[in-house]
Image: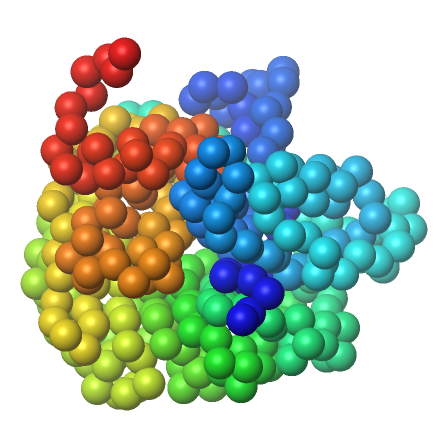
Length: 356
C-alpha cells in the first residue's frame, strides 16, 4: 500500500492581496495568503476527504524553499490542512537572496470591466534553482497519484527535467499521473511550452486545462472560439479531447474547465471530461458572482482527481468538479474551503438560501 494517496510537485509563494478590489498602489495594508497551483490541489483534496475533523486521504507536497519566514509560513499553513510537508527541500537563506529565495505573488482582485491582475516576484526562487539530484524521486514517490503543472515546469532551468523525472518515477512506481497545463506567457513561449510537452505527454494519464491551454501548450485548437472565448460550445472541446487521446494513447482522461467572462465579477462556468468511455458535460453555472477567481482551475483539478481517486462514476466526477470549482469563486485566496457536503448540495441543484 502506498504511503500517500496524492502528491504534487510545484512552486509555492506567499500571496499579497489588497483589501476588496483596491489596487496595489493605493493599498495601505496587504492580506497574506499562499499562491501555489500544485499545493492548492493537496490542500483541497485533504479538505474534501475530511471526516470528523480528520483528513481521510494522505496528501504530500514536494518543492524547494529557503529557510526564511515565508517558507515557514507556507509549511505551517499547509500542515494545518493536513498536508505532509516532510519532503520539502529547505536550503539555508543568506538573508539577501543571492543563493535563492522564496517567490512572492501580488494579486489585485478585479471588478466590473477591470480584470484581476497577478504580478510575480519569483526570479531566482529556490525551486527555480533546483538541480538534478536534489530530490530522489523514486524514493519520494510512494503515492497512488502524482500531479504537477506547466507552471513549475517553466519556472527554472532544470524544472522541466525534474518534472519529467518525477513523472517517469511515478509511472515506474505504479502511480496514476496528472498534469494541469496551466500556461503562463510570462514564463515561456508557446513554442517552448509545446516542445516541453512532447517530452512529458507519454507519461501523463490525466491531462487538465482551461479553454485556452490545449491550444497554447499542445497546439490543438477548439473550433468556433473567438480571441476572448466569449461564447464557448462545450462540444467543440470533445474534438480537442479526441485529438489528444488519438495522439497520446496513454492518456485516459482529458478534463477542461470552460470560462465565459461577462465582467471581472460575473463569469459563466462549465466543465467537461473525456474518458475512454465517452464524453461528459456538467451543467453550466451562469453569472457566478465572483469574490476571488484565483484557484478556480485548481479546484476543478482537485475535485476531478478526488472523485477519480474514489472511483466515482464519470458523470458524477465532472458534475462534482464543476460545482466544487464554481464555489471556489466565492472564497478569498487560492484554497477552496467549501465542504464536500456544500459542493454536493450545489451539484444537486441546492439553492443559496440561508442554511440553518
